Image (tube, rainbow, N blue to C red; front, side):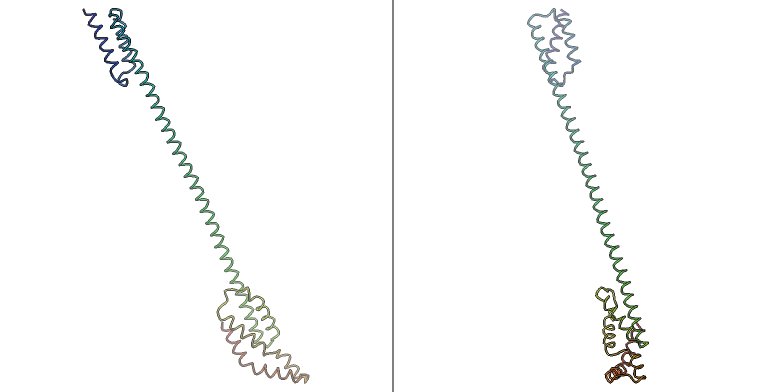
Length: 231
């Protein structure tokens, strides 16, 4: 009777195991139940033996299916994790590449701006140097006028005229005074030469007229020279 009770208990445990969800049945539990049943199976009735054998086969199939599903789920999760990591690395690489491109573009723009600044500085320096040269020529022309050597003053005027189209940064009064200087030079001839010819008595009536016009223009000329020297 004790043996029959064990047979019934083993069969009931196997039936309960087969009825449960496979997830709740571990391989070790099923192995223990199989071992327990094997110890008493020879004493079981054929009907019970067949029934328990079928239940054990169903439990094994359920367990195998569960393990396969569990492995598939784990593989899916690993694949998702790998894909997420790959996507993260891809985003990081893209962000790094974009940052490098942005940094390179920023350096290029800064280099362009620096080149523009340097070019602007060089341009201003060149303009200032040209303006200083023009002012120097004007002062030399003033000095020539002050000495009465209009020929030199005219040469200096011609030099100023040649450089004037490209000159920049000149003070506002420069153009007005230069124009007035040219107007005065038109009226004034080389007084030293005419005066010398007049002393020698070789001056022509036309040259005397020019000398007279030059002398008449002297007060205005000296005022101009004086104004220019004060600049």
